[in-house]
Image (cartoon, rainbow, N blue to C red; front, side):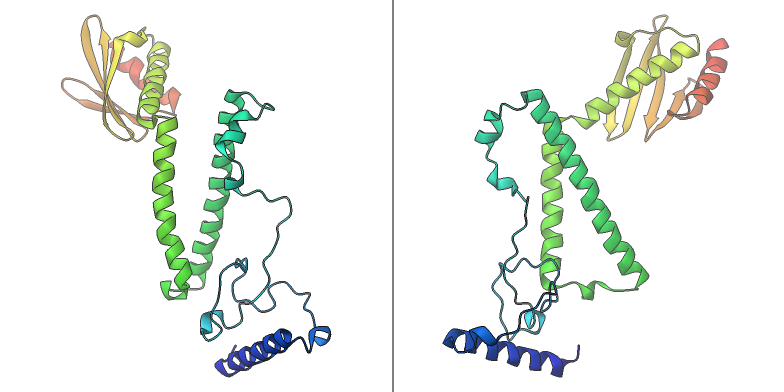
Length: 244
């Protein structure tokens, strides 16, 4: 839309608004059935005050939308959530976590669509509205808070370490080596990186797990065993090592 056309639209809207205030043309104003007829922002819910002289909001006037079957999160207080007898405490906790995970997946898909379209159209960051850049800044902050909340519910480092421990026990068992959970100790180096000691015949045998890759740390050599998900290949390698 050209600047001249925007100016004409602004003037027309001002004129109509003035006539509505005076009550002289209420019955003569045409209505618009097309959603977002005068908006450049499809997500604007009409609750933000706008300045008609600002080109960004020159045609962003519309009435607030009421979404049916929509419940805002703050409308459900913790008090009501806790008192809800339709579910047990365990069901409430797990359903909440699953619902959040679903929403995060949906939001990630929306962001991916924006990234893909922006890339395909070869658009720079200058296409972002001022409000969009502010939203992105807040998004980073909220993601950080969300990550902290998730860690309060679930210690990811500890959980991953315990899973690697269980997987290693099964792999060694399939390779003909019997070990107990208490025979394995591990040290967390960083997220998804663990140093593992397995007691065999009174001697520690070292392994290294780093981002899904398992390595046998022998006295004289290091043997990459491969991805921990490729069980058959790892079992074959472990069998060769402990048959020596």
